[in-house]
Image 1 (cartoon, rainbow, N blue to C red):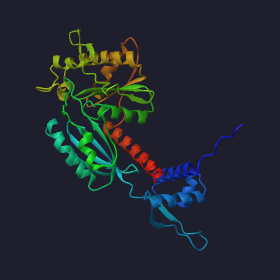
Image 2: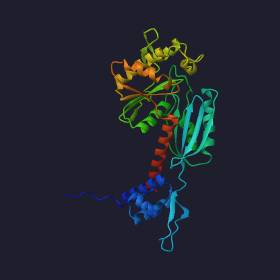
Image 3: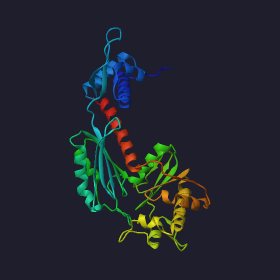
Image 4: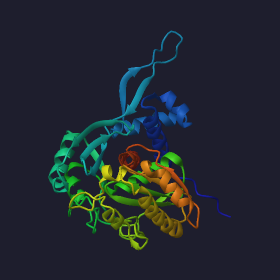
Length: 361
């Protein structure tokens, strides 16, 4: 009977290098002795790994030394990550374009917010905001959150009927590619918000209902956001629910019938809605949406977020308590969830890119 083949020396070196890099990502600076303790590797193995990673610029000697001498042991050098680059995080929303860079420690090293007068300005503002945020840094990848439907295969923004924030045929991948050396990852803001919520709560099966100027939903099943064939899963504006008269109507039309839209737009007038005497009618319509979500996706909980979600949470809960299948309704727990979700993904991808770079030396 043949024995199990031993791992190659190259594989063992790659594993050691990954342990060292991840230890420095978590602890920022460590001596080789400390790296050995944190990683569980031997001191000679750590020493060889540090040498290899220094040669390719992924690890650098900080110039700082331990006290050492006169019975205190040998002087030790502190090491940190080298000049390894950053990830660009961009949010495209109704109030403007925000671009920031995050380093491999998880720190935001730059942040630029550029207001816009309307969706048509995004195409011209986006590259300017990116230039200001990047400011000559080595950008390995970008993650984009957009308040519009996104084609999951191309990263292009998609125009759907009654979407209030229509940027147009914008291709963030094409716009941002000149500023970085790696991929551009684009998703809509509600999906990023759901990922942030999942990371915060640990719940693996839930629906994230976004209620703001626009309407959106993300379905998280087994810990993964379900995007559908083209990436348009969760676009609930045309989901059929109960209208003000009791008749079945598309969800978005409820707000039109109640006079809760902004002038010449399908965007919801949040200020008017919060003062409306018809919040129970809106809550009943949301209950119909939740019925569909529960029937099709069977979530453990429905998380309600957005600019006016928390204001009507009690009314939504009361409406949902009358549904044939009970589901827990809870307020979103993460602030600035779309940015938080996009930034967390950018950090994860940046760190993975550094590990991959260590293997390709």
